Amino acid sequence: MVTVSTSSANKNLNSSGTSDQLDISDRKQSHLDICHTDAASIQSGIVSGFEGVHFIHDALPELSMEDIDSSCEFLGQRVSLPLFISCMTGGSAQGMTANRKLAEAAEAKNIPVGLGSIRVLLEQENLFEHFHIKPYAPHVPILANIGAVQVRGDDNTKLYKLLEKLQAHALVIHLNPGQELFQPGGDTDFRGLLGAIQQTVKTCPLPVIVKETGFGIRPHQIKTLLNMGVKYVDIAGAGGTNWVLVEAQRLNKNEEQLANEFTDWGLPTAYVLDSVGSMSGRVLASGGLKSGMDLMKSIALGSKMGGLAGIFIRDVLSGGVEAVIRRIEGIEKVIRSVMLLTSSKTLKDVTADKIWRETSFISNVEQIKKAEGM
Ligand SMILES: Cc1cc2nc3c(=O)[nH]c(=O)nc-3n(C[C@H](O)[C@H](O)[C@H](O)COP(=O)(O)O)c2cc1C
Image 1 (cartoon, rainbow, N blue to C red):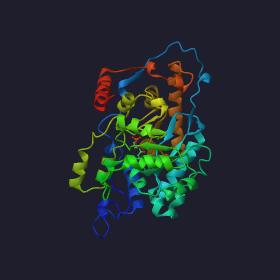
Image 2: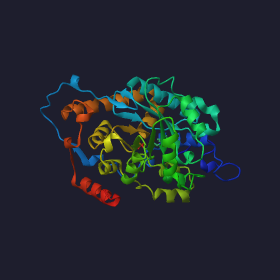
Image 3: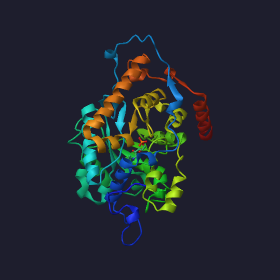
Image 4: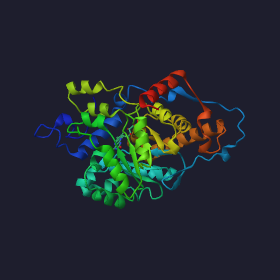
């Protein structure tokens, strides 16, 4: 159990003794504290699946490192790597600093950067600067973030105005029913979200991306979302940060035990990715990616790009901008090395025929495909 630094972590509830009045800023801060200091106890009990995939080594690559081009197009811009910093924070003082530092690192390495949910701004616009990272990342794609439940209402005008003010390049809508069920005061009604997303796609001035937050999205639902005009679906599958376990850290002993039963919950990212196929490069891979090697395996399995969350937040909170840049440069080294050792001049050359899958991986993917009617 982690000791969180704010007075409103659920164990120190407000005077009414209920949790639904928890201030969003305090909740955001306690999430940061937990993700930073208690990494081991919030890790999924299952793996992301990438360990069952291997590259076919090429001992005679007709390439020089100078020939390798690891850049790709994303939201109308050329970025240097198929890597993004997943949506995470904002809404507390430390979150604001983290956002700015993540943005600086993203700008330095020319990769996209995500913001945490801007839900708080719908009520407290005075926190705008927490999410206003444009001055720190003027040239890279900025991904704004909101929960699907927040776009279910009739009128998203306020949200769209915020997107404009933030100068974001896409709206990322997150799905997180598992977390909400264990979050004190969290949502319990998830009806109508697909319709709300469809409506948002029609009215939003920016491309819409849909993601989970660490339990993955069913392959047939990924297809449905893409067919309704969602620009990208980010699997955000199991294998890394488990958000029920994050919430467990804020619960009393009894509820914590119940939450812990969801340690193995979720669809592992690699299995979902292989089940759904490339979907014309509109699937993003995140959730449990730990390295440049995982990322490259995701590219070979058909993803457009891969993202990391928990690892980057720990880097930025422990070592600032430099630590994040170091992490990105390490990932870059592996990306480029994998490309050379598989004779892949560009990312388009990193295809499924460059990998082999272990039998258990194939069998797990088959089971998921069968369940999904694919
Ligand atoms: C500190 C922290 C805060 C997060 N906040 C958000 C959020 O506001 N919106 C969202 O869509 N996902 C949020 N996430 C989830 C991540 O974007 C990601 O989907 C999840 O952590 C799984 O990726 P990982 O295994 O690389 O950590 C957050 C993650 C972390 C670590």
